[in-house]
Amino acid sequence: MTTNRLPIGVLAGAAALLPVLLAVAAPLLAPADPTAGQLADRLLDPGSAGHLLGTDSQGRDLLSRLLWAARPSLTAGLLPVAVAGLAGALLGIAAGLGGRLTEQALLRTLDVLYAFPGVLLAIAVASLLTPGLGATVLALSVVLTPAVARVAFTETRRIRSAEYLEAARVSGATWPALVLRQVLPVVAPVVLVYATSLVGLAIVYAAGLSFLGLGVAPPTPEWGAMLDELRPAIFTHPWLAAAPALVILGVSVLFNTLGETLRAQVGNRAAPGVPPGEAEGAEPRGTEGTPPQERDAGHDSTTDRDPADGPRPVAPLPAPLVVRLPSRET
Amino acid sequence: MTDTLTEPSSNDLPLLRLDEVSKSWAGRPAVSGVSLEVHAGEAVALVGESGSGKSTLARLALGLVRPDGGAVAFEGRDPARLRARADREVRGRLQFVPQHPRGSLNPALRAGEAVGFALRAHGVPRRQRADRIGELFRQVGLAPELARRFPRELSGGQLQRVAVARALATGPALVVCDEPTSALDPATQRRLLELLTELRERTGTAYLFVSHDLAAVARFAHRTLVLRAGRVVEQGPTDTLWSAPQHPYTQALLAASGPEVALRDPNVRTTVEPNEGPS
Image (cartoon, rainbow over all chains, first blue to last red; front, side):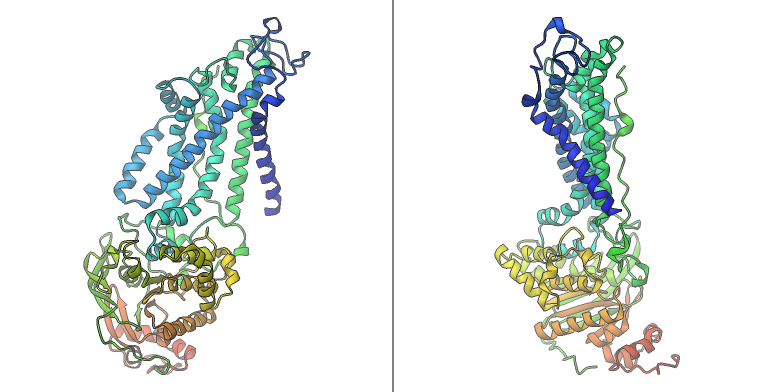
C-alpha cells in the first residue's frame, strides 16, 4: 500500500507545482499582452487564428489573461493559507498549552469568527478594505485561521500530558524551547497537511471575492474577475465563459488531491502520537496539567506495538469548510 | 540481597523531602498526607497497585504537579517553582524516567535529539552536544548510531535506555522513575534494572522508584514505602519489609507476587514458600 502511495504523492506534488510554474513563467508563455485587446477581435471562440483559447469581450487574448491571472489568483490561494497556517498553529498551541483562561479566551474568540459562514466573513472583512489583492489575502487569512487553530489545538491537547513533554519540562527547558522543539515538530506536519487541503478552498474563495468586485481591480486579469467579465457571454459563447471556471475548478482539485495524498502519507508514517492512554480521559483541566493515570502495563496494548504492524490509524481531521462554497455565482 | 546494596550515609539533609503532601484530582483524593525523604545515593521504592497514587506522587516530587497541601522540597527548594533558566543547575539534578517506552520519547524527534534537547536546556554548547550524546548512549549500553533513529525504529528496552540517557544528561542527583520497567518483558526489565543499579553504584545517583513490580523493588531499593489509596500504610528497609510485613495490605501484595519474587530473584527470601499460600 505504501509503495502505491508514494508515486501518487510525488505526482500530486508535481501536478500542484504546475500552475505555480505557469504563473511564474507567464511573461514567457503568454502569446499576447493580457490587458491590450482589439475590439474587432472581441469574443472569438477557442481555436481562432492567433488566439488558441479565443478572446474576451474586449478582444483580449484569453490564454494570456488566464496565464497572467494565475499570479494574483494563486497568491490569493497560497498566501492566506501560509498566514493562517502560521497564526493558527501558534494560537492553537498557545490555547492547547496555556491555562484554562488562555484556552477559553482564545478558543471562544476564534469560535466567534468560526460561527460565520466563511464566505460571508470574507466578504465582510474584504468590504471594509480597499479592494485589491491585499484585501483578499487579509480577508481569507482571517477566515482560515480559526480552522487551522482548531486543528493545532486538538493536536496540542492530545500530547499535552505526554510523558515526553513532562520529561522535557523536567530538563529545565524554557517555554519557547518546549514549543519550538517539542510541540511544533509534532503539530507542524498535521497543520501542514490540513493547510494544504485549504489551498483549493482559498483559491475558490479568492475567485469569489474578485467575482463580487472585492478583489483585484480590472483590468488586471484574475480568474474570479474574468468569470464575472465573461458571464454575459455564457449563452452566446459558453466555452469562453466556462474557461476561467474550468481553470479554477482544475487548480483547486489539484491542491485538494495533494492535501488528501499528504494526509494519507502522514497517517502512514508514524503519525506523531502517544499511546491512547495518554490522551484519553475526562481529566480536569487545571493550569498544571492533567493527572497522571495510574498505569498498568497490561492495560496499554500500544506500548509494545511493533512498528511493522502497519500504519497507525489516521486521526480524523475536521473537514475543510467545503459546505460553505460561494453560492451566488448565477 | 544487601550484598549489592551499600547503605547510603544518611548524614545531612535529605535530597528530597515530601511533608504531609496531598493532592486531589477533580475532588477525588489521589495522595493524602504522604511524607517521605530520599537521601543522597539512596534508592527508595514506592509500591502500590494501580490507583494508589504512586504516579501522582512521582509528579509531585518532580514539581510537575503542585500539591493541594503540604510541601515538597528538593535540595531545600520547591521543584514546582524552579525557573527554567535561572535554576537550571538545580533543575538538572532532579530528573525523570517515565513509564511508557512509546510515550517517553517524542515520536517526531530522533533519539539523539531527545537527549540533545535536555543537554541544550542544560546549557551544553552545540559543539559539545554530539559527543555528549554518544557518550551517554554508550553509558546506557546503546550503540551511538542509534541516536539517528526515530522512536518507532527502536525497541521498548532501547527506548527506555534512551530515556535513562536523557535523565543522565543533566547530571542528576535524584532520578524519579515512574514504573520504568512495567511495560517491558521480564528479560528486558532485568537488564534495565541492572543498568540502573550499575549507574547508581558508579555515580551515586539517588532514585525514587515507583513500581508495582515487587521483584524489581526487592533487588533495587534500600527502603520501600507501601502506598494504598494515597496513604503510606507501611515503610521500612526493603528486606525487613519483605521478611516481616506488618500491614495486611503489604502481606497481600507480597502474597500476590511472592512466588514470582522468589523465582525471579534468588536473593530474595520471603517468609512464604513458593508453593504455599500465605498464612
